[in-house]
Length: 249
Image 1 (tube, rainbow, N blue to C red):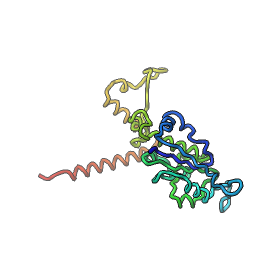
Image 2 (tube, helix red, strand yellow):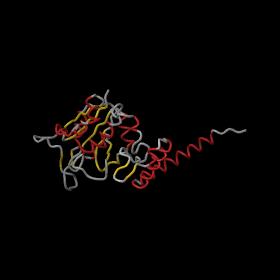
Image 3 (cartoon, one colour):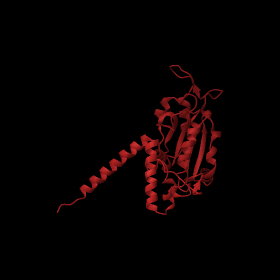
Image 4 (cartoon, one colour):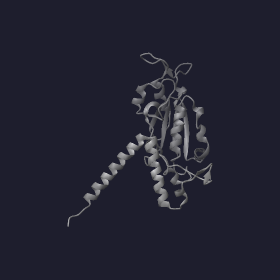
């Protein structure tokens, strides 16, 4: 069975959008994954199919009703075990390990908010994860859903042209990726680092590792700190394992 993306949205026409092109689009056409949208407006109330109402406690904007979202979640046919995710700036940051978890499952159900958000009660009652793609505010969750889906689809078997492409990239081992170069070897007075032209694969690997570490330390201190902590834990675990494996004489 293909990996299934189910999107609850007020704008189903936004999907698959750019995911209908390039590698993701080819995989979509080939049945590697499917994209099913469900219009929240189908469960709106009254003649105008209202899906939102004013917030209790006052304040600007409108809030999508819990009963509307609940009815939509009940109506969809998503694979068993597919996580339900609400895209919101209030959510925890989306990480590559989250993407890998989603991609390894049967699919994902994405709830795209609009206005001021969604009634908290339905998120709690339905066990919906709250995820953010960054510290900024969008007009709605659809763009964020496309980002999450793009990250997931490219990890599905057969989507990318090379298995190594999914391994040697940013965040795969907790570090940002090293710089890339291609022909011409000299351009605008700038030369490709000599080590990349040496043919010495060990030296190239060492250079790339060093570059990844330096870039991560400079640009993402949070990732660098986490990577150092993880390395220290691994080294400590390896040391304990080595000591337990010693035998007396």
